[in-house]
Length: 425
Ligand code: GDP
Ligand code: IMO
Ligand code: MG
Image 1 (cartoon, rainbow, N blue to C red):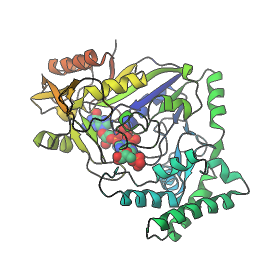
Image 2: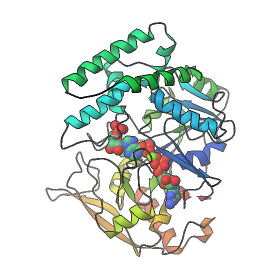
Image 3: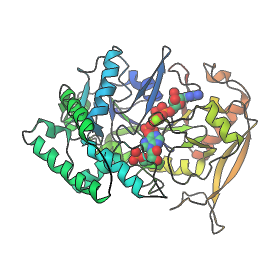
Image 4: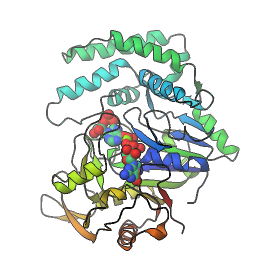
């Protein structure tokens, strides 16, 4: 697979495409791995040597050698969860302190942001977003309202006053929502987290990153969530609160757009979504159940069951266009091993009867039109090279490449680091 100075890897669907696994696999080719948005709403799973790790705020390049990993300015960070995640890694023998850097400009998730997330969701009644409850929306809201606290503020003498002002404002909101809460324990744990976090290198990451590039080194930017959860282009309002698209790597790390080389777009061979919101190809039948069972489709953060459905090429084409995807990465095809027929949505019939293959303003009520392909009925998870692929699987890949006008450069056939096949072209 070709590589350039700055490459971006991101999800093309509704998250959980397998980003963590592929970042881990690609990290040896790069000098630095940097996360550019989101926070502990992410759950990125890595499996190797019989062990499984789920990363939330720490980039997925952390297990490969001594590579530098950066928590970028576009991220939001919860000190309590960060401490738990980092400590667990340190206990597992991963050296973090010298090579995990945190941007001064990343925003802090306060304990009251988490309470607000839950209070605001609770107040919605029907139409809940189904957030991860990690305070993501309220933290980004404060960022945009210019009332947020940043990691760099921890190093300033007036931090305590700033914190109290923010907390008091949040408490007034919680009270106006008649939300019952007890902040004491959460605040205690958070303050411990803050002290622990101060032990890390807190840096001007945009300067660091641009200096790294000046030295001729390479960076892999790691996205979280997926394009269909993007605040601008996702199925609004059932989205997350950050720009998950490629442009988010520029604003979330301080990298100029002209620097971006390859854009690796990750997709599952089917589709999942966790939380509320429209999902045109969602299945409620035995096929959906089979995907859920064979794919172990339960959230890595909240344990919630992920909704499953056929691959949606209307949404994928839109995502590829928005991100300028140069390479597709196809995940979890092994989950479909037992299906005789594989379906792919190529068009929507909208509630007014019109047909479209352009992702619409609102996809609620869109009925998918499917193309059917023969299944491969072969166990893929033990295969090591594309020469071993059954003909039907090759046909499925060619069909995707043709429809999406983008090459598939890497294929994952199981959760382990080794179950990865790079396509030589
Ligand atoms: P991420 O959020 O995009 O990093 O993805 P998640 O970690 O939330 O979800 C992907 C899940 O699929 C994890 O449990 C992975 O271990 C697993 N996984 C990744 N690639 C494959 C694959 O090719 N086949 C199968 N069966 N599982 C995979
Ligand atoms: P990774 O990085 C899947 C979903 C939530 C909810 C919506 C908003 O592991 O792919 P939020 O807590 O962000 O305000 O929730 O977004 N969501 C994800 N779904 N994977 C994720 O991350 C997600 N992060 C948020 O379920 O529908
Ligand atoms: Mg995930």
